[in-house]
Image (cartoon, rainbow, N blue to C red; front, side):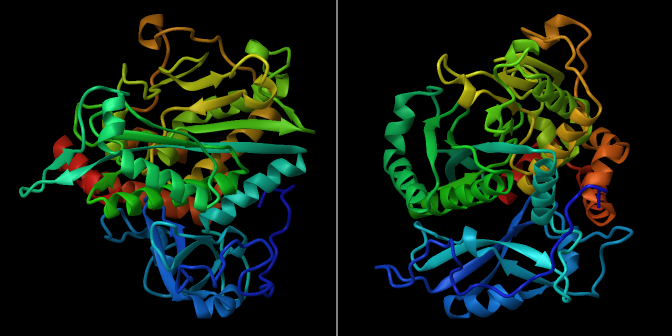
Length: 459
């Protein structure tokens, strides 16, 4: 624990079957019968345990059993081990956050709640990714800062033919209305489902690649942003299934084609003021906002092992595809890894933010938000300043460094990062690096087509 971090509380009794802030109505026209308790593992796979709704009160107090070995599951369900995490022994408790409980509009009779993990003595588990994200948000709060964050969600929708090949639901034209026409019923149902789940949608639109769509949601606190992106993805999956489609959030669907990102937008705030606007730093950043962004940029090679963790991620990370493969920043520069977004004149004090373009949906979003906060806070503590802005194509600027070009290089950067190692803590750091090493070994003999095909099925 960082010397100035707040103490972690032990688990207290629940306030009731729905909690003070829950929104599920058990007596609604589609009463809730089953609740999915979700978490995301270190390979970026969303996993669940489900319980009858009638047991929610008891489970909210005492949780359900949960093996620590889940922290070293790989994406294909094989299992590795770290120095501190792994093996058949031990047990934890997975406890739902009732304030985040939501009905699943595309799965009648079901609700979903993200879970936090505790030891059997009621102490927060050191390897819990969601607890880590909350701890980093609290660390920012102790410094008088809050963060607003939100993920873009890109996906490809389609079907599989008899040979198991993925067939996108549509092709040309990129961003075209023709694409909306092909899946208008699906997008309408998705928009209604997200609204019913209290998700504030900003845009739903066709994207560049064949079969590709995107939804953007309003910014939230860091843990809420991670919860929402998990909920959005699974809602997309459920709605598509009702229309006979499969979806994938994989960073590379077909080698050589534009892939799916999961761009993170974020802005630090102090005393109600957006630190990305109205300051004396470059492009109107406040000095504190600039230092936060500079800290993120400094740690970006290591952050890549968190936000774009696998072989499929690196198939997406190529120049000239707006994937942000260069370690630089720029105003509205979609080829820079860190893009400064000011928004429309007259509303910039509310909308100005930074976007990390190199991340994708194989990442655990709780790890993403937590490590970005840790990197930004370290930038403030060290009084960092941003390097010279890159205003155009970084590949033509000369001397602009690339981000790590392989999972092994990104892992080496993570292992060398004192900032992220301290923030994550030894248990979580050990589990993440063990999974990354094992995934590198597993992908070593695979072709790009095999890597993309597997990611397409798993994510």
